[in-house]
Length: 246
Image 1: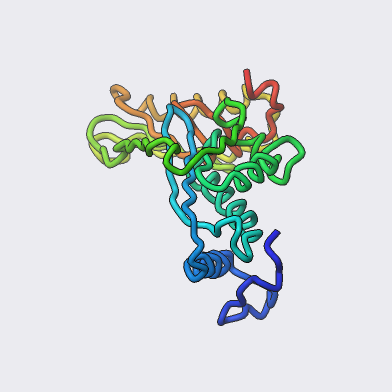
Image 2 (image 1 turned 90 degrees about the vertical axis):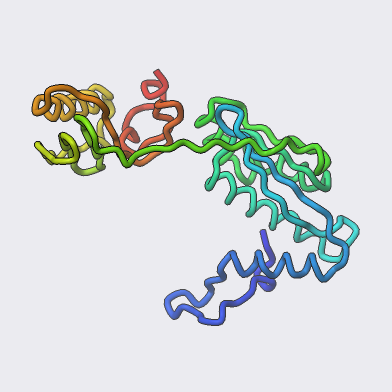
């Protein structure tokens, strides 16, 4: 972990947590140390997720021979964790000093410092979580993809909000609501996925009954969805893993 005596203190200290040290200040302080050392080396991180998409992040760290180079490890560990939860990924390409890649391999392994993240992200993307070390120029090129969604009101549409305490559904024709319903339900505590299926289909059928046809269905629900498949969702937290996976 980052040495506590080197974590920058904020200018305004919150009275309810006087030991609070914002991570962004530590990030700025480390990068300033790297720049002033004149011994900066490039670090390129690639995060591969579903569909072969790759997000690339470029920064600098201290040369392993530089004074204070031991700070590279906590800096990169925090950085990678942040990138994983912001962008997702099951494979990390580490282009930089080998010591950093080896440290991350230890962190993201069963029993390692980030064992939870390793298991979670591997499960989300259905791949064994991997950390691969290489030279900065060997990190694959960024491959991102944008998808235009929403802002369509034409035709006959259903909007469904799968909330944790109540579910809401609306039938909309040419942008005008013709039916709305809100029903209390308790999906988080249910172990049988048939409970969720029944409630969701009931809401959709109820809305569809108020329109001549259904052109599209939009769903709002917390979680991670890949290729229209639920990978992680708070609604199904009560469903045992063996049933969820089937």
